[in-house]
Image 1 (cartoon, one colour):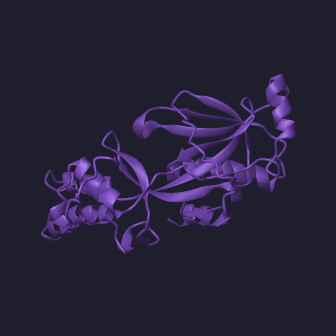
Image 2: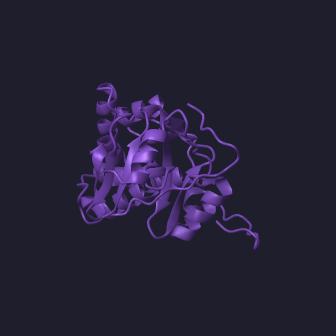
Length: 250
C-alpha cells in the first residue's frame, strides 16, 4: 500500500498509519452502480492510497512491488516499471507526432494516447467504512474523483464534530464515465434495530482497519507477463518474456 491517512489526503489534493492486523487478509466490497450501503464513516487517517495498473477485461488491477517515482501530476519520471515503460513507448510516439504538427485528436494520434493511458498507473483510494447492517469494516476502492466527493463529506462532518453521530448512505449510480458516488447523511431514527445497535457499539476506536491483502502486488516478472497477456510486445521496450513455470499463474 503506497500511502495512508493524511499523506493520502495530501496526495489526493496535490495531483503511513500502519494497517493493523493479526495476520488476516481483507477483501474489497464491491460498490456496484445502483447499490447502497448504510455505513458509519471513519476518520480520514484511516484511508489509503496506491497506484494501480491494469486494463479492464484484459489484466486485473495490481500495484507494483517496486513503485516508480512520480511527479506531482502522477506521471512516472524515474525507476520505471515495465508498465511505465510501455506507457512511455506510446507517449513518446504521441510527443513526436505533436512536435511534427499533429493535433492530439488526430486519427493517428488519439489511439496512441489511449494506449499510453491504458498502461499508465492510476492513483486509487481505499476508504474503509463500518457496514451498519453487517456490523463489520468494509473496504471500498475509489478513483480520484470518486474519493474527492466522499472525502469532502467525511471532512466536513469531522470538522463539525458530527462524524461519530451521523450515519450515512453510501451509493453509486450511473455507468462508465457517468458513474457517480455519493455519501449522504441518514437519520438515526430510521435505522433498523441491528444497524442502530452497530452504530452505537462500533467506533473507530474498537474496530480493526487492516489493508493487508486488498491489492495484488506484482513483481517485475509478473508485470512483464501481464504486459504480454494484454497484447503488448515487450521486445519494443527491450524486455524479454520470462521463462514460464506451469505451476504459476498471474
